[in-house]
Image (cartoon, rainbow, N blue to C red):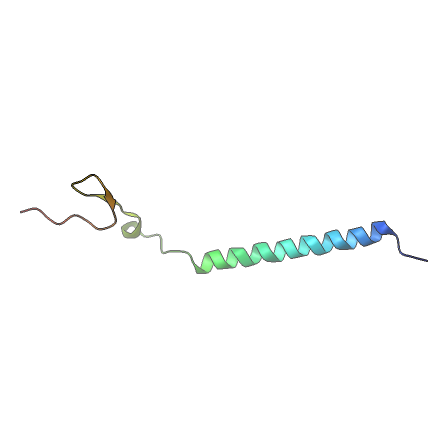
Length: 62
């Protein structure tokens, strides 16, 4: 006799869950590898004399 459709669907759903879990784990590892240092200097932003936001500190004035 043929197998039940319910059994087939259970197997398909389990495959989909495993695939989704593996993809999630892979994305997590990619994020960890590409993570920036997160130090204060890299997060700093400065405003120049024209009111624009820049990543470089302003030159000291004399």
